[in-house]
Structure formats: structure tokens, C-alpha cells
Length: 138
Image 1 (cartoon, rainbow, N blue to C red):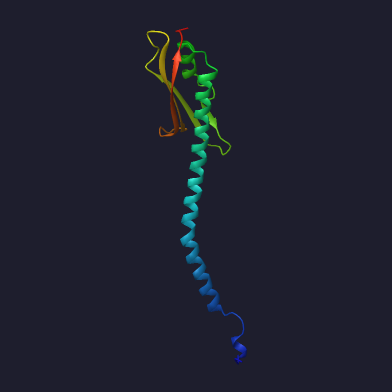
Image 2 (cartoon, helix red, strand yellow):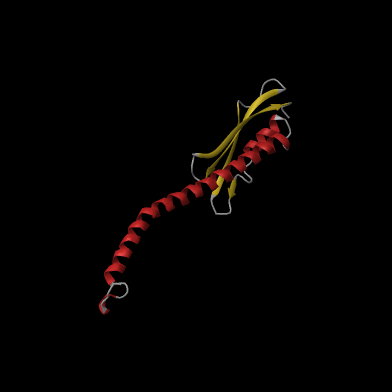
């Protein structure tokens, strides 16, 4: 059985300071990892939302838009809904283009590209390309 003196009971001030020092060192080591995880999560949400917008636009052009060059040109130049705000407040811009212009012979194939970027940035978060057959000019 150990004999304790009256002045050695409980936790001393030095013990508390050492514990606080060890906890602060641990926190300093863990905080950057948490910050990186939060940034990665935020970027993943942006990329996921951008992918959904690209899929939606390509589905729209393949299902809802008539297979004429005039309709496709109108769809590609349509700016309504081009800037979409996600629930977190990030504004995403939808860019549409069909390359090669209207074909000279019909039916003809054109390439339709859609990409989404953050507002004011040129780096795409998501992009996709599809081939579409046009039946006429008008």
C-alpha cells in the first residue's frame, strides 16, 4: 500500500499543462486533414452537380429537340438556364456547342458537346460529347 502525502492528491497544474500541450499537438496534426477532406467533399459536390447538368442537357438534345439543324442551332445558343445555382450557392455555367456546323447533305451527323464550369472559370467540371443525326436544315 502506497503512502501519499496530503499535497500529492489529484492532478497538478503541470499535469494539466502537459495534457493540453499533447492535445494541441494532436489537433495541429489532424486539422489539415479535416480541411482537405472538406475541400475534397465540396469539389465532389460541384463535380456531381455538373455531371447531372451535362447528362440532362445531352438527354434534352437527343429526346426533346427536333432533328433539324435550325433547332440544334437554337438549342446551342439558348442561354436560358445556362447559369444554374446549386443548393450551396455555387453558380455553374452550362456551355453548349455543336462542332462542324450544319452538314451539307442530309441526313448528316454532327457532334454535340456540353460542358459545365464554375461561373467565371474556363476549367470544365464535367463534359460530354455525343453524335447526333440531323434529318434536315429546317
